[in-house]
Amino acid sequence: MSNKMFHIELQKIHWLESYNDEDNLDLCAHGKVRVTIGNEIVADNSSDPDDWWSLTAMALHLLRTLEFNHTSENKVGQCLVPSEGHHINHLPDEPMVLIETVYPIERGVNWWVIHQDKQVRLITEANLETVIPFEGYKNQILQFVDKVQTFYEVSKPKTLPEEKYDREAYLKLWKEWNGMRTKWK
Image (cartoon, rainbow, N blue to C red):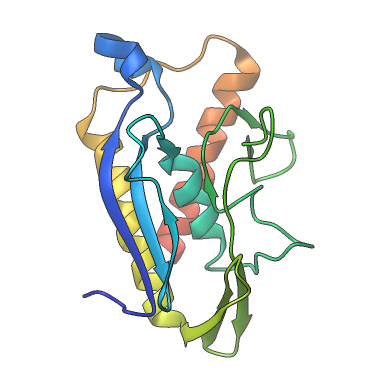
């Protein structure tokens, strides 16, 4: 069921084409997506054939917004819909990873997410506000997250990075993802 006040449309998902038959080396799903908040299309990269957004980072960031506000002062990620995810950073005692999306500059789309009682207030970059029930917001996020996760599950198994730090970061990303996804069944 579609929510007319907040809708995520996954249009295409794939691994980077530069990997060709070695797509098991690409750890981040990329693709085309359109996000609508209220009457505003806030994210849409469908018209540019060379613009492939980081859907893994987007899904992780949106999962975080189910529990946390995303504001200019307290971001759950550098931007909710990152154009690219360049590197996964992590600290040993920190359960959340940081997917760097600011290379060389932050590219992507943001909107603010503020929880109020059993509703979510969404404020777009154009400063338009839409308030929706939390359940509708949550359902759109989980539908998108599940599509991205299914793509991983039907693809070739990923080859983990040889570098210990990078391998731990990737595994930590999935631990965080799976923990949040289980919480919001």
